[in-house]
Length: 217
Image (tube, rainbow, N blue to C red):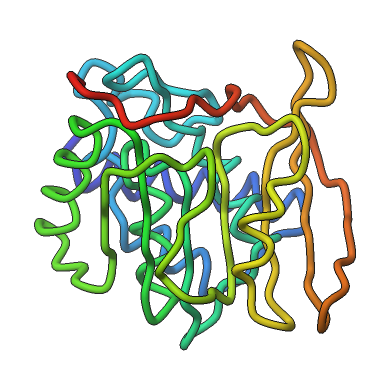
């Protein structure tokens, strides 16, 4: 089976699983289809590229199963013209998908290795509107203005208000919270004026946020 056919069949299976969950957003699914997972998955895990399983990547990190990515972006509701911040670049797959839907995506990660690899993938896909930086995501990101959407993929013990403060009115943020030592839940905050509406969504496999930029990885 050719790589192109593997991608096509893998994506078709994702569409069926997502439709079973009531997710059928054409713009979102088209963005996923246009972002080949094989470019982001380590070669030894290529058979799992379109599975719902998490996949190990460099620096002790992991990339989400494709089902979770689609589920998260379905709830984030990225639209054309949006400025998006992602905290936790990982492989870069989620940022790449968002880059096909938003005006600009700024994604940060503490690991230089992941930042460098993700940048090469964006270059290969000619995604010039995805900006990748090595930064410490544990204390907020100053000097970048406000965002329409924020996606955090490292878990906090309490809602990271410093990111919520960077939302425009009408903007929303998804962030995982550690409910207990072994249980993490994705929460959505929607900002209206100076008020926030909180909604708990579903369990997620994220790890607690680690402060400071990694010096050697």
